[in-house]
Image (cartoon, rainbow, N blue to C red; front, side):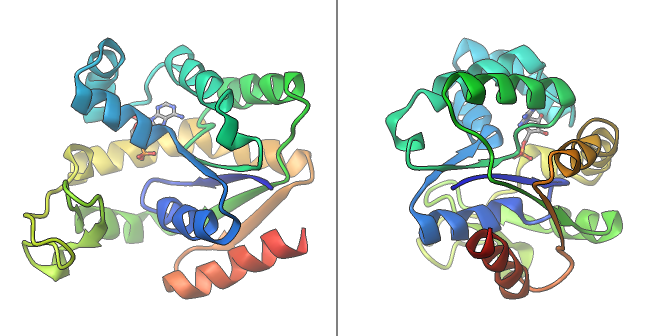
Length: 210
Ligand code: AMP
C-alpha cells in the first residue's frame, strides 16, 4: 500500500502516519523529519534548508525531490510507504509521479486531513517534543517528558508567527494538490477536527476498503 497524507502543518499527519506504520509495517517517509535530521547533523543540505524552515517557507523543490529520489531507492519502500509532508507543490507531485512510473509503482490513496486554521494555530503553538525519545506531546503535559523524564522542547517553527506563515504557504502551494489527486480519482478527504481515534477510524476504513 502506497499512501500520501496531505494536510496543513498541525493537521495530524504525523500522528496518523505513525498509526499507519504500525498497522501496515511500511516505510514512513517524512521530509520534515529528514530535513530536521540534516539540520541537527549540520550537513550542507541541513545548512541550506535551515533558513527556509525557520522562516516557515518551503525548502526548494530540487532539494526535497533529491531527498525523496534517494529514499525511494531504499529497499524498505518496496513493501509500501507513507509519504508525510511530501509532495507540497505541484512540481514535487509531478516529479513523484515520474519517479514512481520509472519504478513501476503508483500511489494507492491520497488522504487529505482537513482542520480549521485557527484550531491548527492553537494546536501547533502548544505542541512540544522530547529531543531524546522523539515523542510529540502538548504543553499540558508540563515541562518534562512522561516517558523518559527529559526536558520537553518547542520546535523552532512552531511559534505563532511562523505557524501562520506556514499555513499561508500551505494554502498557496500545497492545497492545490487536493484537486490534483482528486483528478486522479484517489483522493479521500477527512475531517481532522476530531479526536485522534475518530480520525484514525476513518483512515483505517479508507486504507482497508481501497
Ligand atoms: P513538516 O515537519 O512536514 O511540517 O516540515 C517542516 C518544514 O520542513 C516545512 O515548513 C518546510 O520548511 C520543510 N519541508 C518539509 N517537507 C517539505 C517539502 N515537501 N517541500 C518543501 N519544504 C518542506
